[in-house]
Picture 1: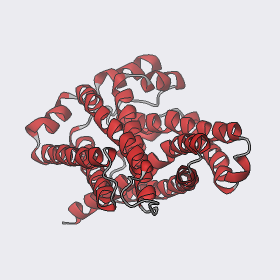
Picture 2: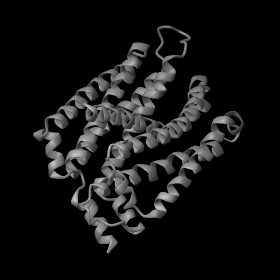
Picture 3: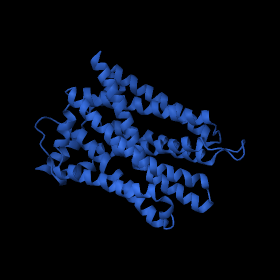
Picture 4: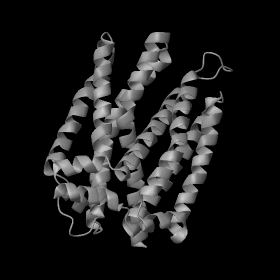
Length: 325
């Protein structure tokens, strides 16, 4: 019973962590696009959403850091220290620079949130700050933690890899597929976040759809549809045991995966309605609820794979080992 509660708590915390990181990664880019729309069309709703999204982005990253520490403590207390083994197999310089990259993000995004209007007089400066913060986080952090998870499941004889081996590993199909999966998830989460912001705005005309709700729905729907080919690519990079667990040899893993697919279809249903003009609050809340369920179920599937079946494709770790020699 205690083990089930511990695993459930880890899954909930990890899903919340993923969604916070998603907002932190793509939120500044979303704000950049919304600010551009506001300037071109004098769209006050888009301007307000852009500022709100920047504020949300740095707060989400701060929350993600706290959640990450909580997950680490929970793993350590429950004896699941394998992930820490993976971290220790990364080049030490990558871990040091990761802390600096987090500081770099806050240095760029927090001033944008505080002095949004002042920096808006020079939109290219504000845009460059947001672009740098977002792309820096997207480039470094998903790949770093995916690589650590891959190395955690490597054989015991696996030693710490060099910086060149780490860079090579970052561009293997196994790691790239997971990184792209996370980035698309982030686009969907930010799209739905914009929908939630716009859904609470008063309409000037009750029968006219809220444009930002439709725009956020289209972002999220495109990202969710692209998850189909990316998901198939990701599935093909898994070890045979892990792939078999998803496709039927493990009832719990397969059940979670099937439930996630059903929830994803429900999400697409709600998103398509919003994209075509049904921007009422019940539709927006339906999108948000379906998205949260998808993330929870996919996180549970991921935990099952990593904990019980391993997911290190021989190509990924083998490539790192060859570059390490």
